[in-house]
Image (cartoon, rainbow, N blue to C red; front, side, top):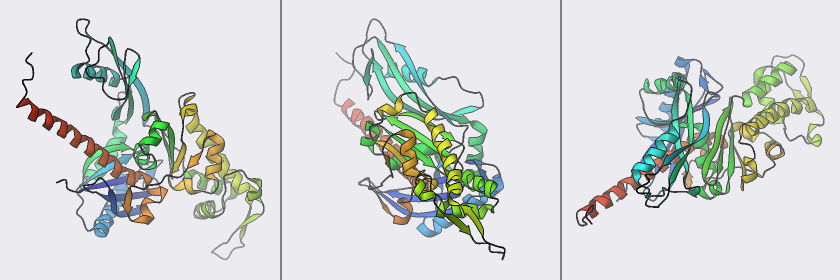
Amino acid sequence: MAKSTIHVGLEIGTSKTCMVVGEVKADGSVKILGVGETKSVGVRKGEISDFHQVRTCVREALLEAEDVCDVEITSIILSVTGSHIQGVNNRGTYRLPDEDGEVEESHIMEADEIAQDIAMPSDNVYLLNVIRHYWLDGQQHITKPLGLLGKTLEADYHIIHGVKLRIQNSLKCVREIPLDVDAVVFAPIASAQIALNRERKDEGALVVDIGGGTTDYVLYLNGAVEASGCIPVGGDHISNDIHLVTHIPLSKAEQVKKTEGDVSGDLAKSVGIVTIEDEKGFPDIEIQRQLLNDIIRGRMLETLELVKENLPEGSLKNVGTGVFLTGGTSLMRGMGELTNEVFGLPVYRPEQPEVSGVQAYFRDPQYSTAVGLIRYAQIIEEEKNERKSKNGFINKLSKFLPFGSH
């Protein structure tokens, strides 16, 4: 009988360092056991800028997670992000032997290898190679076209790669705790596992994860990854903009952004004055609400437009579901209206009906990436077990059936 498995996801974000512990039960359901979290120090635009400070943050998150969940954590699944990470599509073409046009496993492996051999900077390494579709003589196949007859086999892949040393910095930080790293996952791929189910991926959906230092995105069409990437702009940049224009302290700018700001562009929500109390006895500061909203809207509009520009031309026409917003900054007032304005699609907040446990955490979009890592680990585990099951079945059959004889 199958046993439950514990997985731990670690997100080293610009705003927070978060470690989520999840239990995948025998029936496939996921229960979040708890979260260890600390404010990030030494992370800029999703990347490590101060190694020792980040290592301290990871250790604090680990100790809290172990304490809350009463488990010993020895390995994690790590999410990474940063503008150096790129997602590209590539198709590999393999000409089947003239004497026998039946597709065999070796032919598929050849097509896979050709598709994954892309030109990329010498300093970069692969993060993820995921099959999108196979094609046999121009006909699309969702699964391997084994046993079918044809002349030309093509493998269509989405390949994610990034700068090796920047990724290694995150790995080194975790391993010095010490913790083992079971897998490294590009952050929006993890977020998508929570935001989208299979049906939404098939219909087409865009996930936009707006964090403190980055805005990550992944687009699914026909059940496969069409595009992914990272814009090095997030909620912290909005706070900094407010600080620079109004000259209020950065901490106050962060607060007023959350409590008073609105990015919808609705003029009715830009009337009046925002009063900011001074804690040192100086006169209160007054800011025109219109100015505050214009600052916030300008930065977010630019960011979402950059996401749109990075998507393949015409791809949004094939999105049948809409845009799913995650990340802490997505909670800002008016984000749904602004996102709809930019992409011209319905906008949704992800729901996680298949996850139970600590309600306040897994329902909060700030934790989509970390919780998504648990779901990602579950999917990888299921695929691994499925392959073992198939191999075991074939091995059993081989004892009774004369394979290879005619």
